[in-house]
Image 1: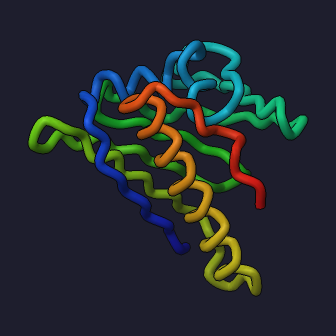
Image 2: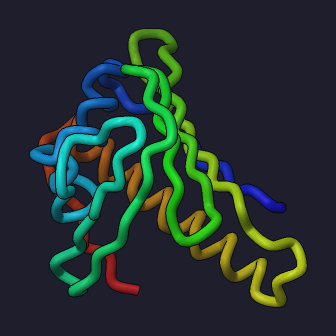
Length: 140
């Protein structure tokens, strides 16, 4: 199985970044428009993208406060978000696993998902560092 790794430095604490993901009041500032509830291990959370009339469920596998978030989505995909504190900022590292090496569309799936993670990280950076919401602005 292939994986897809994306990283970005954000000039905020790991605590602020962790809360941006798990707090349903904050996730709408950079990623999905809403989250059904606060993220907790073992919970299934519904994420909604109002602009596109879409929603999907994720299952929270592991939460290490201010350090790590692991969830399953899109069938057999596992996403691990690591928050690495370094020089007064935080490196947000996202690794998505579960891509089928034998899928004829593997390369386009990897590129599409990489694009999505980089865009989400850019929106997270804009939201936390500058107070702007860029989410749902990208037109493909």
